[in-house]
Image 1 (cartoon, rainbow, N blue to C red):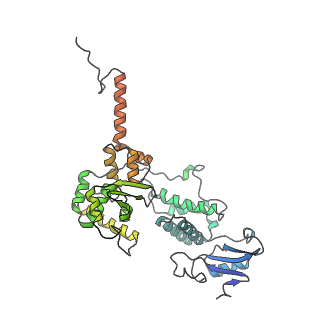
Image 2 (image 1 turned 90 degrees about the vertical axis):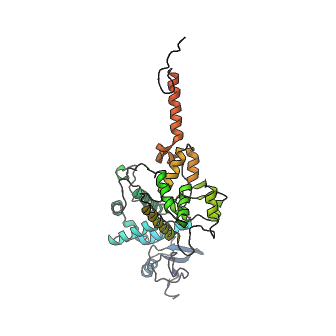
Length: 375
């Protein structure tokens, strides 16, 4: 095996992905994980990516390399990294830097599959035309949903990363400031939270742990994922605090004492997780349970509408925007943009300003002329 893995003084090895069953054996070269080379230059150990995922291609890479040159001078005629290899490298980079999530893995897989179907092997074959074709193939709505914009921003991040580290001489994603026709536009529908009666009907229908889960969402505005991940370490008295899974922004919200007592009475550290079951599966399990409750209660809503209800309820009660933003872990700007019609604080301020204007004009607080005083 040792001789097989060498081309002259160059050693070829695998840099396995986390889900590869051979990840503990760098000498295993029959998998589709990225292949690297190791050699000495000026008494220094050099490790370099080959940009390919098979041993035969890595061997050709090593044979064509002029190892007497500095790495950046070598193999100028190489077609570069394959798309599959670049995606794996990008995902590894994200994971090391704490940026891992399901969406980049999904989109990376979609890109590799699309390239396979369209005869694209190497990253530098992805021209702006092909990149736009790939974007068009993504199955996300555009008229009223931000899904395409959110997912495409992740892929644009991939191409920006590839350009930033020198895998691409140019970023193939069209610059929307120069070419505004490539902007992803959508009309975000106005947020319509469920009514208080609808929420109470849902809570009256739910039972057991389903009801407790729904109560936490109703009284915190937390997402279904963050509620699923709620643990005893994030509960201090009746205060729930932590960082959102989606944005990493801090949230801090108090729940009724009776609800905190109900959570504290549950066994274990994790309130809504089951040992051995992945977070993704548990989120799907809770979403399915809640939708079953909604159907039984004959209420048309989704789990996320608990968040809309909590935020709009707080704003309608006059809670300052900044305080609500801290409770749910988002920016005050986002609250104002999404929930403008529910901000009682702003309405009261406008009403007060209007009353002052009328007063200066010699009118009463309702804008009516003040009747002259009869002597």
